[in-house]
Structure formats: C-alpha cells, structure tokens
Amino acid sequence: MLHVKLGYTFTQTPSDKPQLENPLFDMLSAIHSTGSVAQAAQRLGLSYRHVWGAIKNWESTLGSELIVWERGKRARLSGFGEKLLFAEQRAKTRVMPQIENLVAEIEREFALAFDRGAHVVSVFASHDLALPRLKDFMAQQEKLHLDLQFRGSIECIEGLSRGECLLAGFHISEDRAPGTLTQKIFKQLLKPGKHKLINFLAREQGLMVSRGNPKNIRGVPDLVRPELRFVNRQPGSGTRVEIEQMLVQHGIAASSVNGYDQVEPNHLSVAAAIASGRADTGIGIRAAATQFGLDFIPLVREQYYFACLKDTLKEPSIVKLLELLARDEWRVLVADLPGYDPAAAGEVVSLRQALPWYSFRKPKPVKPEAAEA
Image (tube, rainbow, N blue to C red):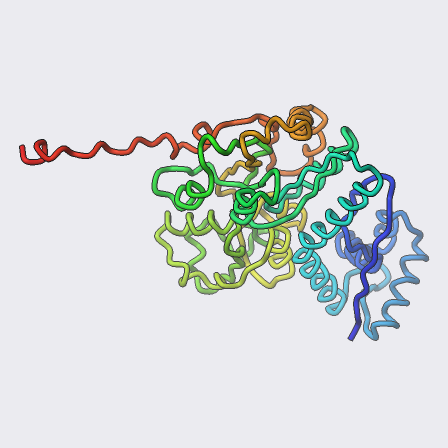
C-alpha cells in the first residue's frame, strides 16, 4: 500500500493551482483529456521526453501500466490509470474544504506574526469556487486577510450567532414562498434588526449528469427511477435544504431515491462521483459540472449571501470588503465561472428585503363576538 505525506511551502503571490498538487495526476489528467502524450506535455509546459519518462517511472513504481498507446492511435489511460485518476479526484475534492481551512489557519497566524496590525476578517462559509479568489483579491488590493473556514450553511449562521466569526456565508434558492423548508430553517436563525445581508453572487443549481446525458435525465421527477444512482449532499448544507425542498414540491419521498443516503461534502466531490461513474446524477452548481466535463440541467437560481451583525458593517475591514466587491475588477475575476452572476455584489440588504417571509402578515385573531355572529 502507498502512503501519503503532506507538506507545504511559501509563495509571494497566490496561485491558481489547487492545493495537494501531484505531478503524476497532472500528467494523467492531461493525457486523459487530450488523448496525446505530446499535447499533454505541451499543456503542462514540459517536454515529451520528460512526461514519457515520468510515466514509465511511475509504472515501474506502481507495478502496473498507466497508459495504453499504439502508434497512429490516441493515447488513453489504462483501466488502472483511469481508476487511479478518478480515485485521486474523488479523495481530493472531499478533503479540499478541510485543506483550505487548514491553509487559512496557518496563513492567519503568519499574517499576525509579520504584521500585528493586519486586518483579519473571519468568515465561516458554505463552500464556493469564488471564495478563494475573493481571499486573494482582498489580500492583493487592501492587504486584508480572509480567515476562511468552510462549513455547511446552517453551521455558518450558528457560528455567527455564537460570535465565532464576523461573516457567515450561506446560500438559498429564489423559491422563498411561505411554508417552504427554506423559510422554516432560516427564519429561526436570522433576526431582523440584528442581522444584515451582503450580496456576494448569484449561482445556478441543477442536476449534473455525464456528458451526453446517457441516462436521459430531464428533471427531479426522474430521481425515482430505480436504475438511477443519486449522490446527495450532507445534512446541514444549503444544497441539502434545497434538495429536500424540491422533493417535497414534486411529492417525492426521500426513501424512493436510490442513493439518497450516499452523501458528498461539496459540489466538486458530487461532480467527481458522477465523472468517475460512481453515480449517475446529483445536484450542484453549474461551475462544478463544467470543471469535470459534465452536462448540466438547470433547476433553480440561488443567491449567496454573507450574513453579519448590523454593527459589523461599521468595521473598517468590512467597509473595505464592500468596496472591493463593488469593483469591476472583482466581476472580471469571476467572469469565467459558469452560472455565476456578481452584478449585485457588495450591496447590503435587510432581511425583510431579501427574505420575504419577514414581511408576511399574520392573520388577525378572530374576536369571540365576531365568531358567535
């Protein structure tokens, strides 16, 4: 059995590359997508000889063939090579939020070590692909350190209530009608006059399916088909709330969905499970589907907010954050993320503006004499 050893290094500038890099999997992924060792080498900025030699060395170490290549034909991963690549992708996407939490914690301590006057903005947030970009943008533009901890939407707001963070990132669908599960859960967590909301961005949620949609999945009603394997999100996540709400709307019992108890911790791990063939469909954001080469069936539009205490808006670091979110540079930074809309980023809204159930009028009690009449 192979063993994994983790380490870290320092860089002067942020990198677009994900954490937990490994050259072998960069090469396997490039060969898998291009069908060519030469094109894979070109994509990675390496020589053909280097990639070929590295693959052969890894085959010797692992004791199994990684690529199948015949002259005049496209190079492809062997069965073992494909299995290895998808295993790495699934494992990495599951642990990535925890790894990013660890990196944030280490960076916060170093930021304080180098500059005791550094502004640190503590954020508990539901996992999102734009948040690491916001972290880098804040550091570059205003030297603000975003202490970013990824958690489920509900846990984030609970952490805000306990005073463990300045901002709580969460997302809810645009379906906010009276009596919805969204209303039931979030109304008890957020209080008018106490909390304010900051618009971060809007996103698309939908069903992710394999390229070409071989199972002919069209919408939520298809989830009851016994041959379909569904992959769910964990309880306490904003997406899980949306999934449960959609099932209620379509009159579908959770027990009738094959795989409902199989959960993944974030959008990317759901996409990885589908891309590797472990599941046929799951609900997540369009950007995650695109990253794994999946097709996407849109279901709902949702808004991602930062919740905070009303007085927090006066904090200098939060004033700077609002200014950064409103800049055109920020919109450019997320323009390549499919399904994202940052048009309202940085706008502060009240709970009554954003969540209509705070404005629902309660029916007046009927007076006894009126009832008798």
